[in-house]
Length: 223
Image 1 (cartoon, helix red, strand yellow):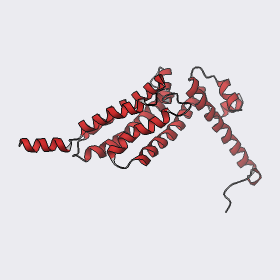
Image 2 (cartoon, helix red, strand yellow):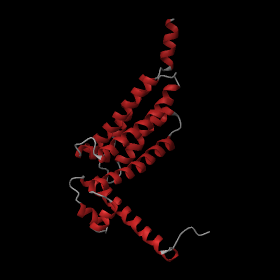
Image 3 (cartoon, helix red, strand yellow):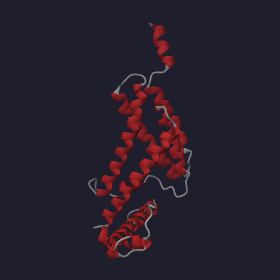
Image 4 (spheres, helix red, strand yellow):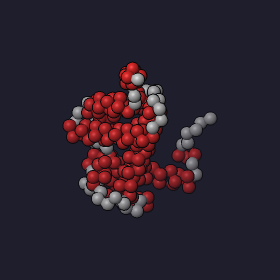
């Protein structure tokens, strides 16, 4: 069965809807690329419309404002980035400890890629003052989702040595700081190996978070 439709296979209403969807996607694509490379304030609506091969009319058909368009573009990037990060982590490692460390290997791949300009969500937060702005809301939601993924893996790691919810939460917060710190250093220095340095620091956190076999032996011998 052929699942691909040719333009003349669509009805008039379907074809029009497909065209409108295409315009919207082009606007989102152009916005994401332009604000990631040049910033939100430096990117005007006219530049976005030109890059999307659209018109101002098509822009306002789909979005009430530039801020609404930027928020939508970031929300879409969030979904794609999280899928990439989670899948990359899980593909590289199976155990909780290995997955936590693999996160930095995934980051290094990103840092070394052409066109890396840091975290789009941190960058956006730096440009938008109001914490209630929809753009800042999307950025917070992104970091919250990243934290939840990290926390899930931390929970599994800590559970191996005995459940301790407070220790897991603290480890996840520290992990997120290492991730964001590595992103910032890689952006400013251009050094992809910032991920390796963060990974080395992360190993010490893991050793502190869970009792080692040698520690258990020392405790047993002291008794």
